[in-house]
Image 1 (cartoon, rainbow, N blue to C red):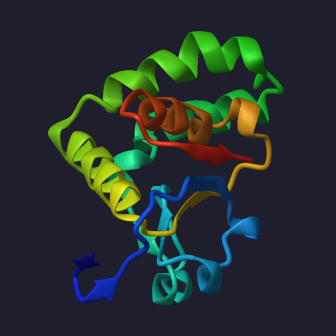
Image 2: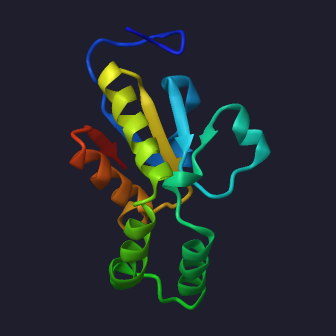
Image 3: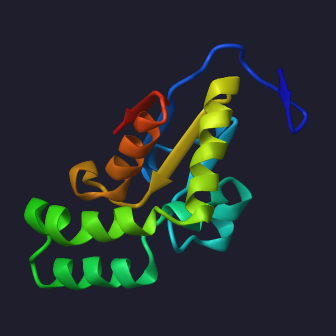
Length: 141
């Protein structure tokens, strides 16, 4: 099968969702940075997808919580998660998720990343859940 001039694998390959330190662009057909901010140097290797990143408002809340030593599983679940999932209801976000599901089904090797080190307190986990709900297999780390 061909998508955008690329020959793809015939069987679906799980989408890898990780932090930037593990996002080796040489291992994947596409690597998406699901971040609001990205260095221009990184744009050579990675596609920035803001529609799958927290809003500037939510990122600011996260930053304040972290600076005040209040960033933990409770604040993630009660403050961050509800707002992030609400933000993920936009048409642009839904289109990005549908694109990922299509790429997965076509056998593309896809990696999504952000900068957080702890996946338990990161939107990567929430994106993984959304993709799994669409029938997409993911590897989350």
